Amino acid sequence: MSAGHTAVTTPARGTPVVDCSTPREECAVRDVLDRLGDRWSVYVIVELSAGLRRFKELQRAIPGDISQRMLTLTVRRLERDGLVRRTVYPTVPPRVEYELTETGHSFTHLVRALADWSTAHRPAIAAAREAWDAAADDARRHPDPPGRGARTS
Image 1 (spheres, rainbow, N blue to C red):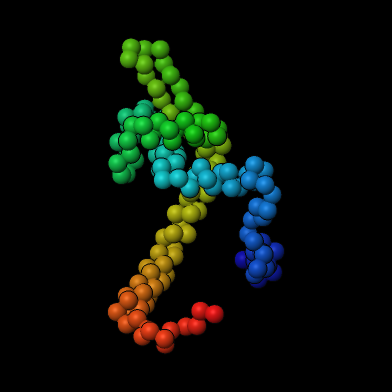
Image 2 (cartoon, rainbow, N blue to C red):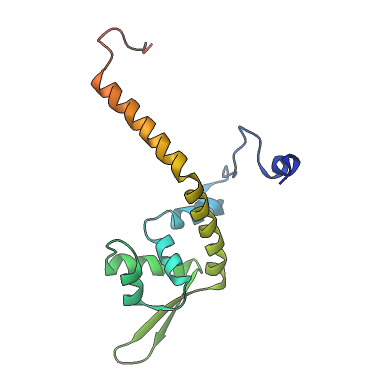
């Protein structure tokens, strides 16, 4: 990618990447990030990207300990947002299946990009965390003596 192309697609420093200065009700980015920033939504989308899942299959496939209630709330929210389709079959007991909608599938490309970014930057993030933790630990072990710290006025 040329430097000129990067300048066109990358905002100048000091310019927000996304402008969400509109009221909360009008900011679609904030609304979507609220949903996808919760603990379980991305896991559900990742699992459903592989195809149709029944409720218990989905629950078992998600890493961690998601409760039945939390999974129910998560898929309902994703269904409300148009990312997941729920199909109930009139059997005894009822069979319920979940799958991604076209909109849900389109989101998986962004999840893949985030995963790729995370993998590429993992060493730098780990190094930054180590440096920060070491500095914080050093500050705890060697606090400034009273009266010798930074001015607070």
